[in-house]
Structures are given as C-alpha cells and as structure tokens.
Length: 216
Image (cartoon, rainbow, N blue to C red; front, side):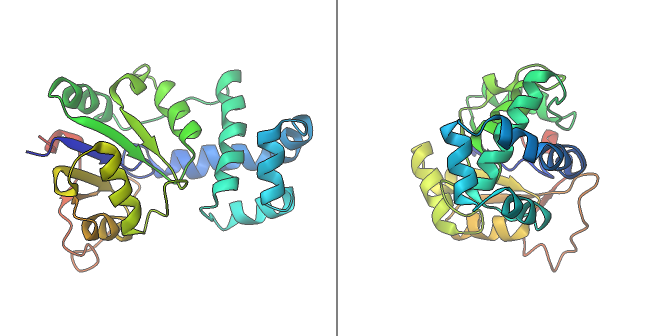
C-alpha cells in the first residue's frame, strides 16, 4: 500500500480553466493597483524588487513563468480577492471525498504546486465543500525546488519522513511525473476534463487516473 499521497493542483485537483481563466486574469488586472496600495508592505516590495518592477511581473505572467517572486505576488493579490469574497476555491467533485477517505485511512496528503503555499491554502480553504485544509498535512511550492527536478521530490520525501517508493505523486504534467519517478516515487497521470490529451507514447509509462475514486 502507498501510505502517502502528493498532489499537484492545476489539472489534477482543480480545473485548468479556473487557474487560467479566473486566477491569472484576476491577478493581472489588479497588479498595478495592488502594488501601489501595498507599496510599504515588505513582502510586496520584496517581490516587486526581485521582479524588477510591475512591468516585468506582467511579462512573466503572460509567459506563465514559474517565478517564485511572481508566485508570491500573485498569492498576495489572490489573498485580497478571497478575503473580499471575489474569489472562491474550486476542486473537482471527487477531491473532497478522496481527501476525507485518505485521512480516515491514515494516509498523509500533501500538495506540491508552482503556486505559492499561501495560494494553495487559500484555494483549499474556500471550496464549496468547506475548508479542505483539515485533510492536508503540508504544502510545497517552488521554494522547495523546480517541479521538473528530481531533487525537489527527494526533499519532499524527506519531509514526509518516508522512502520515496512509499509516496504516490499525482499530476497532469508528464515531465513532473518523470522527475518524481526519477526520485523513486510512484506516479499517476491525472486525466481530467479540460486537460490537453496525452497519448500513450507521451505518457512515458505513467498509468492514467481519471478520478481520485480510482486511488484506493
């Protein structure tokens, strides 16, 4: 049995459209106003300085670059949106029952996403199914390392205090699954509505899963 589960978010727990059609445009449209209103906030100022200004942040957003300062800034903007009630987390219908089932079965569940830990917590705490963070034991973002780097998954296994083969990583991104497998983890390819199709050759041998109900 696999005693621990590591989950991606976009295209795995959450529809790609929510990220690309809701969260990303929300951050982009409010970037300049938010930065101006929070210029004295050290966390905002530090992220903007690391990005060499709001214009660079916009360019990186347009290219969907997995930049840690950008993800920090986006997370802070989304936090404001969640607190205003303008945003609410979205997950696929099978996610909440699976998280509850895995907790009941004693399986540790953690998240690894390019979005900041703050953004991850906000998404899972504001879902229609309630606050799902009560089922999640930890969160990892790009401060742990790139999602395509096997060393990142080795570090996560260490945080789980488990050998990598005892962890199952689920993601819609084959290159992320390749990195996790290189670190010794088990893998499943999330095949969700709205995800780009992946044929057998491109799946690199990662078994597909269409619903978390299939993860016993």
